[in-house]
Length: 127
Image (cartoon, rainbow, N blue to C red; front, side, top):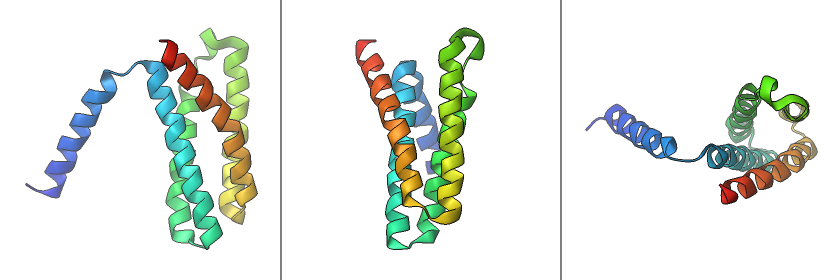
């Protein structure tokens, strides 16, 4: 079996698993993924491994951009606006962290995302 066929099978299997998860759990998983990538980026900066930093930061950026794009400003009102502002801040700090190899900026983003992940985990546990 070719590598492409294996990858296609894995993608289809993951899609089936994801389709069965509640939205709150999926959102929590996005936060977990972003935080894992931020931790990897922080470690890469500390090691001076710029080749590893870029995909980690890029992955975190993509996840946060996705979370931001999923906001329902119509239904979410003030909460959606506040989350949008937090995501905007996180994205700007990530760009800064990437450009300047600034681990402290990554820590700021981690500090913003961690409580959000915990809140979504609590929502998911109640659902």
